[in-house]
Length: 468
Image 1 (tube, rainbow, N blue to C red):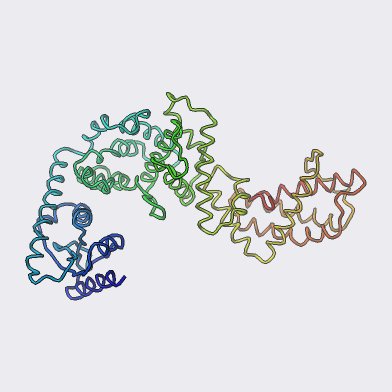
Image 2 (image 1 turned 180 degrees about the vertical axis):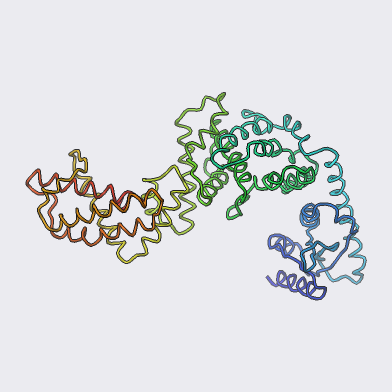
């Protein structure tokens, strides 16, 4: 809109004039634009002493309470100024600035007070308070949830190479900042305040960042935890919530999802897909379910949760231009190790760009259709001496050669090269279908040819279920 562009231009002019850096928050700009008719960008200041308060707190107060923008110097240091937008050009702009500075001073004084009060005790001392805060009445308090998360993290230690003592300390601290005055006033600072207070308490260096990363990703497309400890905390907390809420029958229905289970499931999916790991989704769900013995969870419910998470994964891949008829064949082969699945799907995507891939894909479908019509039990054992036509002998020869290469490639998860090997089947398989009648009248010949296709299908299904 014209108003929005006017505000941006005025802000940029101020920044250029004073050699400032003023980051524009688009969501806040939209909100400001909706409440002003004749926008006039103005500058206020505050006492430098407030810069002793954590920067995130000052910014939260400026943006959340006052709809103002912070100001930085060219080295990205926060300055004691703020940008606000007046609704009209005043004949007494100094009074307008003074009024806004007065309100800002009060808000920042409140923030400084919360900070000072919070710092009277170390962060770990807030853990006791989580015993009186209910997470969900059937699942207990935040303290109960923390104990369950600790159990999951303990199970993750050998898988992620975590330092056991640091991992358990991080879990013990993980919900403490929720009890502080600062997070009570600014809920959006959860994790950030835990990180800041833990650093001030001189907790081991890996812990403060993990306390922030436990909340990543916060929304679709947000960054993921970079540290193994932050990764473990985030994964464990979300798994506990998913299993617990599913177990008491509150899984999402329609648009209702009060515990944001879809978001938690998508976060689990993204973490497992994008960080190299050998974690198994069923095992992870079992880790979380162990602490819910008092709920007598049935295996079918855990299977439903797994399906729910896989559905989020399908949606994720579809939103990234992976057709469903690529995703389903991959899941048919691998639906436990999500990182391995991601390697297979990415290789499959590249494979489908090859000029001969579609031909092989269609031939693989034909193999499936033929075998689907057969009621006989097939073991895939091929009698090489029983092959008659040159084209079926050639197909069997190429298939054996490919298998020798494929075994090593699959063990090493070298799926791009494995697909390259499969492409060598395209031409001989095409010739086979042109010259060989599979359902021959001779029953022995027919069964041998069907076993050849069965053996071939096993190879075609070694990366994804090609043609399924």
